[in-house]
Image 1 (tube, one colour):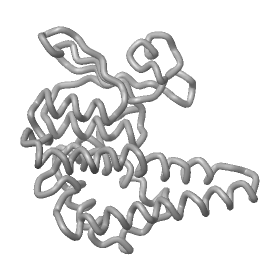
Image 2 (image 1 turned 180 degrees about the vertical axis):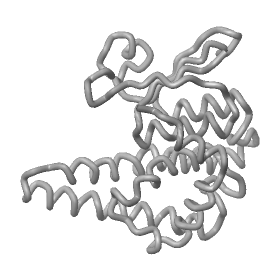
Image 3 (image 1 turned 45 degrees about the horizontal axis):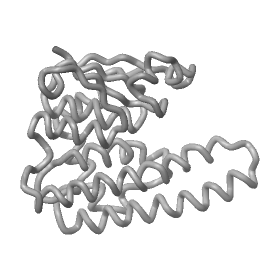
Image 4 (image 1 turned 120 degrees about the vertical axis):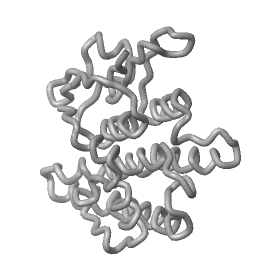
Length: 209
């Protein structure tokens, strides 16, 4: 049976479509039009009480019983454990994957998300302050990732992991962040490598809205 992916065409939504494609799991897309407030409808709040996309419903969850999961990081960890793919079972190998997944959830998402917001603010003074503050932090985070990728091919280490899917969802919007990847050559190499993967490519091509 197919996993239900309740989502929209956003960085967080793309994390999960990429992961599902890479893991070879069947799924159906259920668009949640956040521009029209569909994320506040009671049916969606039952599976995502924080009224944020994405969320999934797996009809064949643990013990063969349905389960819903919200928060993109939690979804990635659930899918990794379900399939035993892109999430190392060895604890030592798993730790850096978890570290970089949490790094994305706590910083490389919220900070560029603020850049997205302030780009649309009409008041010039408010826009200037917000863009300066959050663009500086976003660029710092690109630098942190660039240094990491100078040491290893992927965020979690030697192999592609759920951390890469999470980070890629936001790096996909680097142009909107006003970031030229040429300034971060290791990120650029990683980004091009990831985007060339067939599963990742399908994950970005599937219609989410």
